[in-house]
Length: 89
Image (cartoon, rainbow, N blue to C red):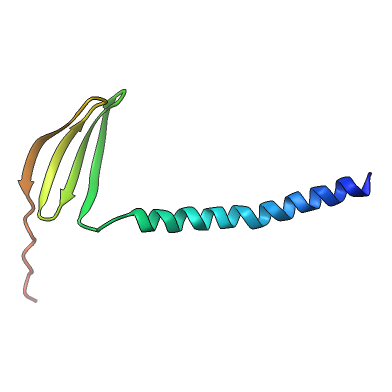
């Protein structure tokens, strides 16, 4: 085997060993940075077919039922979240 070919292969493997963990770390860091506030979260998703779904979204003290298609997003329902009462011990 040609020594230059082996050396080139070793350099590619070393580059991949360095770049892949860096790429994973960078995407996780960027995802956490772009996560935004903790006030908004998707509680549940129900797919209704191609490009149609229902989402239950919790925002502040409300729970919203949202219908999503390619053309529009519609709030279908809304209800107040009830805080569970603490049970005295």
